[in-house]
Image (cartoon, rainbow, N blue to C red):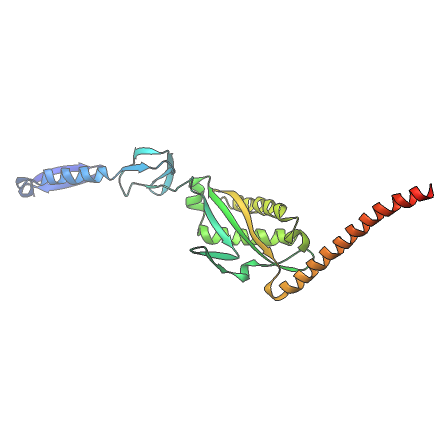
Length: 243
């Protein structure tokens, strides 16, 4: 059949004369232009553009207006690399300052074989967009499991007194460091920004007993301080009288 050959890249199309007579060339030209325009994309100030050519990452685009070859030759992902995300362990925020406890995550064993209820917030962001997009499957679930595992490990290395009182800051820092080691090991492209201990407390079943023990310790310290004060007062007087 007589006609005209039109070439689009490696594809050659034979257009019959009858179609040419009704002006199909302008229609094809318009469709081609519209298809080419689909390659224009914008990267926001808080994003990076990761361009894939036939599925393989070929370049990373910085914020601004850019162009990539139209689908299916190239595609682009624009993850937000400055956004700080969060993972909650031991509880879930359900809005309006309301929280739901998740005890199977928060109940942990300390180094001296006591049980505590520990809740943390892990804040993180993307430091390597390519690794985050293609090495990190199920980011939320993975971060939650890594954070819970790290916290259990750290709590298990400290006594209950440290977990409830003086060791909280150290536990936070050690947990942050351990989570970073875990996500780096699996090349997730994640940076741990902060770990915040929301609450460390004894389980509800024994909370009253812990309060009694804490109160007894306070009474003990008060008696010791009173005795030392009396000692510091009476001994100098006695020495003076002896002289």
